[in-house]
Length: 258
Image: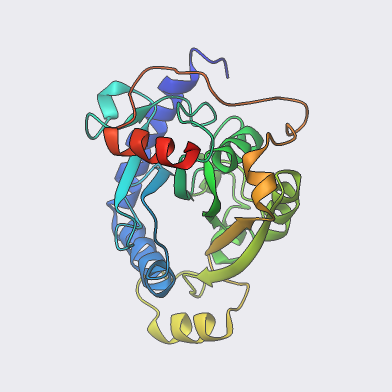
């Protein structure tokens, strides 16, 4: 996918994703993820957060004061403060945000390694990185053995295990603090499975359709210096369309430098 066509392809994916997340199945997944995130998100705080997602905001229950949203095109931007860019080319300075959330995005972007590296670049030294992904070792993962399932969300893209993402995070000096699974169900059932969900989350069984990874930088030095490029490609810095930082973000950066 060329740089010129990538925003249009991402815009198409977002329109497709909004139909999925508004469906009964998508809403069921969202409820499970929010229920799992709720107790975790209560401990997340900071001045600025960034969520990159194909769906509507997921972590609006946190104590983070200001959330920055992302869009690949102006047409899909939700407000004047939306970042309009390729997700692996964020127009934000190093260490700009206290929390970065990648919500089911690594599976479908053209450059997942670069997206992950860019997310860590803009993360503050004491910040958190939260990754939501689809587990290939699950009921939904087994259903993807059918080529038909891989032509539509959520089955599209490349589903990766938490172990694979742990290896990727090693490249950017980030380590996993916590791994949670959610959305437990039996084959053929898409509705509420309260008992399975309760047991699965209580024992954190690695069979849920979705997982939530919380990660932190290994050290302040790792977060303030440039990272090693993943597979030889350096990322970051280039503006591809929009938007300026809001005054509160610029002031936050001045205070850090001071």
